[in-house]
Image 1 (tube, rainbow, N blue to C red):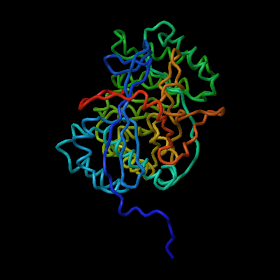
Image 2: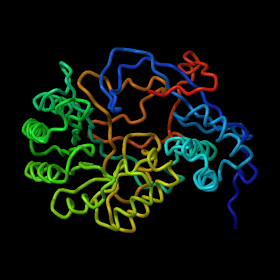
Image 3: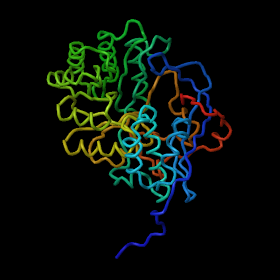
Length: 399
């Protein structure tokens, strides 16, 4: 006997794709390499993509380019069923290859997650339940901003150690260091990275889990030296230490180190390149995430690939989509990344467009998977309406 449901779905249609642009006050700036740092307060901009349906229930995801949404996405998907996420993803990625330079992984991810958000709102459940549901909380680690030369910032190994002590006092059981990168003139610097790792381990003791993210700055000999030094310090993983276009260097490094290598993060190719890394033994832990993969739809395929091969998978950042996937993952995904954190910035107040932060951490160091319908976001519509701006047909970078 078929279950009776008050909601159908076979005749739903997308009727519009909208992009809302709004301003907010930010104290985060970016250097010429794209790294985030503390900055003087300034006006920044964010976008919100809304997929409008004929049901009166819409799907939302923050991000998205207004011009691409209007000129490509809207004509492509209006009239489609918003529950046909696989069909829409394949159409945008494969069939519109001539527009692939405009439909970036991030743009594709925003559309896919807005569709998942719609589905959760339509069926009145969080997305993690639609994906299968596995757990309701995940351990958090503190992820620092990159090193800097700012007074009171992350400008020395001692500064990292002091900040790590503060993070432990605030409840973190695990910390990941991003160290110094260009455009700082003396970076990258293996000696400084090793010194920072030593200082932090000495400051927090042996019970705190530590990781290092080198952000593909080093040669394989330098990466090997750093890896061997942090093995002595009982670090949990070494992340992205070399250029990810060179998979052979990672195969070489993974064979020589005991510490797990976590990668790839920036290598192009979504799930297909990560399968290649698994097959070649180039990394012990695979890095994934909704924005690099192109949304929840392909990320869940990576989850199942990693499960099939017995390989750990760690997701990049506490994006609402990542949190929902973490709630449905039956394999590690051991941690959720909270950050980026800096001693001069308040992480908890960065998203005034939400009524509450998406990833609050409890006293035991866990982030609980949001249980509101859809992606779990409670949007602060009054803030967005008060700060809405018109940008014509152009793009305002959401930073």
